[in-house]
Picture 1 (cartoon, rainbow, N blue to C red):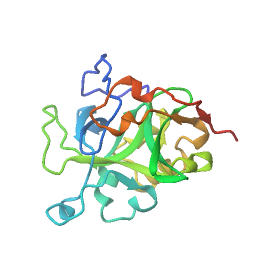
Picture 2: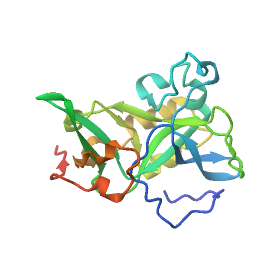
Picture 3: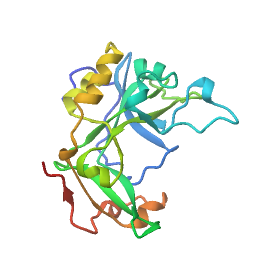
Picture 4: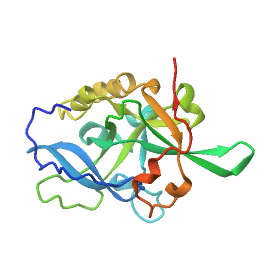
Length: 223
């Protein structure tokens, strides 16, 4: 990201070696606080205070771009809780057209193999002690898929370029500009490729690098 502002954490040189991240688990994300850019571990899932408690739906793991800007559910975190989830890729499952009970997982990544910066929103307490408060969590912003990726899934994370990702974290950014970044400055579908992987990814206990090994030739979107 060529980050020029202060870092409020010590970057770890060791790889995380975690190739299967499930909702509700803690995920490392980047956000801005009063000390600078910070990386914190937050649960994957967010609900505003009024939507929590027994009888309510579980925390949302995705925030739909089409409604997040105007929705009461997301209004506070869209304005002041923008963050980034760095990732190498994500998985989607495709139903077998001849047998809907059978599904094939695909791994989707940038053709360049560069890290992705997934636009996200959430609530984080901040501070050096990184102590979680009740209600801390995040969701990944998603948009409608396009072109050949629609065959894999009709939704996709909003993946920002490094330059756009820096601006997304700006605490002074107007909500309308944040929406513009997510709508018009995200990585296009033709920047990605996808391929079949083993079904072991369906078990969250499996986390090794073999999960992203291709079992078929990658598909690259051509324009």
